[in-house]
Length: 404
Image (cartoon, rainbow, N blue to C red; front, side, top):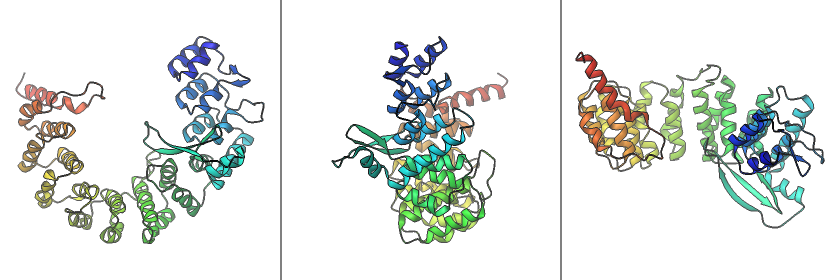
């Protein structure tokens, strides 16, 4: 049993699973608490999932009347709560009600205010930004008097309400997102994801109406919601707004905030209406590279190709990479596309050179063979890029065509 405890403390989910397979008790106690509580306190979702997979009880009653699940809620970990709440299906009605009530209390009070209430302390709060490397979102971690929480409670409440069929009012969800005004914050992301899966006309119209708000943060959230609605509910195959990006043209034409505009353009690229191309091309020389990088995706007419190719020489590498990616997937036979890709095989950034060589190979352009040498050594510590095999695939196709 000590080996299991040490594996949990080392944050080694593989060892935890191996020990559980050997017969270790998933509810081993440490100072009167199940070992799952160690993973919860450490915000260690992989180890918690390993313990739960081995039979650990997320509702194990603790001496203070809490459970590992309610401790995860109090700690403010969206991913941990999801793991623990879904480990026993269905979650009992009392456990579900307690979980939602706790999350709502934290969400309404705010993480700092509730942290001060439960600790009874008034001193300074230590704050650090915590990034989830797996999904890219971030949250703020607050520590006061030895007690640590994360400000993800509004995301916990939002996702758990949706899971149990509670249709939270649109305005309430908007308020939750705006309490964390950053597109990468877990609460903002979860609200956008939740509303995006509703795919109903009412949510579309409410989101579109937000674009008229004088505050740019409200408009940014509106643009994000509309993008999410256009992408739709892939789980259930519902995409009723896929061809309605054209409705956003009036707002894209007048939006003066670069970030909001970029999200609007992204949403509009999933519609092929000619007026969308006109809006995109009007921003060809926009001062913000995030906007210029989206211009190619708005273009559908062959006669606009020459204009887009000017971005292959853009001073911003992000714009050049976006153009290269677009050209690599362009299936027209225009020779200038291949010429532009050859030029991009000389780019200073290796990721662009890889994309350009791959694009040439997919187009069956023989210049890919010589250009491949310009890619240079690839970092062996980085995940393998499948595009590096495209020249080899091109050569195999040629050999087969030649009867080899």
